[in-house]
Image (cartoon, helix red, strand yellow):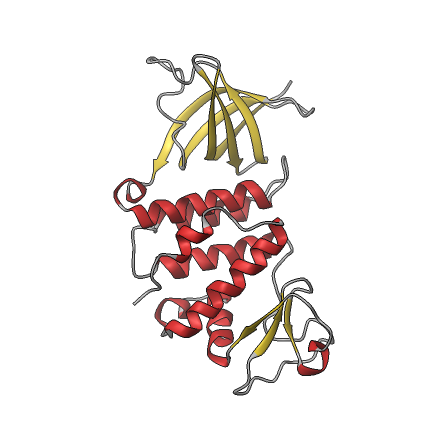
Length: 253
């Protein structure tokens, strides 16, 4: 049974027995794992308070190749995100990120870039002005890393560049992206994006810093939030539990 060391984000914790916990960890080296932490709830825990929910820890565990729980042997706190303890909206956003990591990824499939994106996003949730944009950029990063990123410029049906005018653009949830007028016919599970909302979504999905300063129109933001929420719900097979709390947070001013 090999010993593995990795950075890990604690995304779920369940108390078992009298003093132990079963943790779901999103690790940089192994992806999502479930591990038993014996004695984690004792007053003098061997894990030095390094297993708080939504904290980053440096862990050592005995990794089992079967479906049995891995065994956590060491954990030391690396980073705790204080804004999650001071700001309820930031905490809801953090819970939403952990839900996506837990539900969209598979066990033992590494996604180091997604791990880094999650940590950076959690680190900056204290910035209320950019919080909504950061969360949506994380959603897009998650979809991209998992091969689920929707097409935003070329028709997902025929590959042609989608002409954007004053009429709404069809955004296919099942087929995975924008549709031209010819390919729109007969497609189910479609939401609609305005010209402004599609442009904003393209900017939010792009590298660089333009996403920080791009002016957000409230109506366009509502369409974007609704469409990405529906897309993620489609891939999950259900609506994320924390999405309603996230939607209740006002868009950036």
